[in-house]
Length: 81
Image (cartoon, rainbow, N blue to C red; front, top):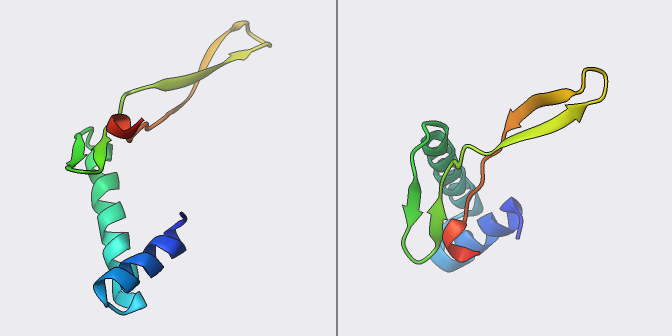
Protein backbone atom coordinates (compact mmCIF):
# COMPACT_ATOMS: atom_id res chain seq x y z
CA UNK A 1 0.00 0.00 0.00
CA UNK A 2 1.38 3.40 -0.92
CA UNK A 3 0.46 6.77 0.56
CA UNK A 4 -2.27 7.51 -2.01
CA UNK A 5 -3.87 4.13 -1.34
CA UNK A 6 -3.69 4.77 2.40
CA UNK A 7 -5.42 8.14 1.98
CA UNK A 8 -8.12 6.46 -0.14
CA UNK A 9 -8.64 3.76 2.49
CA UNK A 10 -8.84 6.30 5.33
CA UNK A 11 -11.42 8.26 3.34
CA UNK A 12 -13.47 5.11 2.68
CA UNK A 13 -13.38 3.88 6.27
CA UNK A 14 -14.08 7.22 7.95
CA UNK A 15 -16.35 8.93 5.44
CA UNK A 16 -14.01 11.93 5.38
CA UNK A 17 -13.22 13.79 2.19
CA UNK A 18 -9.98 12.76 0.47
CA UNK A 19 -8.46 16.18 1.17
CA UNK A 20 -9.19 15.83 4.90
CA UNK A 21 -7.91 12.24 4.89
CA UNK A 22 -4.69 13.34 3.14
CA UNK A 23 -4.16 16.06 5.76
CA UNK A 24 -4.72 13.52 8.55
CA UNK A 25 -2.28 11.02 7.03
CA UNK A 26 0.30 13.78 6.45
CA UNK A 27 -0.09 14.90 10.07
CA UNK A 28 0.38 11.39 11.42
CA UNK A 29 3.47 10.78 9.27
CA UNK A 30 4.91 14.15 10.31
CA UNK A 31 4.33 13.45 14.01
CA UNK A 32 5.95 10.00 13.76
CA UNK A 33 8.91 11.36 11.78
CA UNK A 34 9.45 14.16 14.30
CA UNK A 35 9.37 11.73 17.22
CA UNK A 36 11.83 9.37 15.54
CA UNK A 37 14.05 12.35 14.76
CA UNK A 38 14.18 13.10 18.50
CA UNK A 39 15.12 9.42 18.99
CA UNK A 40 11.83 8.69 20.78
CA UNK A 41 10.07 5.35 20.43
CA UNK A 42 6.60 5.43 18.82
CA UNK A 43 4.22 2.69 19.99
CA UNK A 44 0.91 2.16 18.21
CA UNK A 45 -0.99 -0.54 20.10
CA UNK A 46 -2.31 -3.14 17.69
CA UNK A 47 0.09 -2.01 14.95
CA UNK A 48 3.68 -2.00 16.15
CA UNK A 49 6.57 -0.09 17.61
CA UNK A 50 8.80 2.17 15.56
CA UNK A 51 12.17 3.28 16.81
CA UNK A 52 15.40 4.77 15.62
CA UNK A 53 17.82 1.91 16.24
CA UNK A 54 20.90 4.00 15.55
CA UNK A 55 22.03 1.60 12.82
CA UNK A 56 24.75 3.24 10.78
CA UNK A 57 25.41 2.16 7.22
CA UNK A 58 29.00 1.96 6.07
CA UNK A 59 30.85 1.18 2.90
CA UNK A 60 34.46 0.43 2.22
CA UNK A 61 36.22 3.23 0.36
CA UNK A 62 38.72 1.41 -1.86
CA UNK A 63 40.80 4.58 -2.21
CA UNK A 64 41.69 4.82 1.47
CA UNK A 65 40.92 1.29 2.69
CA UNK A 66 38.70 2.20 5.63
CA UNK A 67 35.04 2.35 6.50
CA UNK A 68 33.26 5.57 5.58
CA UNK A 69 30.10 6.69 7.36
CA UNK A 70 27.28 7.08 4.84
CA UNK A 71 24.09 7.89 6.73
CA UNK A 72 22.00 6.99 9.72
CA UNK A 73 19.24 4.56 8.80
CA UNK A 74 15.90 4.51 10.58
CA UNK A 75 14.45 1.09 11.15
CA UNK A 76 10.93 0.56 12.39
CA UNK A 77 8.02 -1.82 12.65
CA UNK A 78 9.95 -4.01 15.10
CA UNK A 79 6.94 -5.71 16.67
CA UNK A 80 5.38 -6.87 13.39
CA UNK A 81 8.38 -8.63 11.87
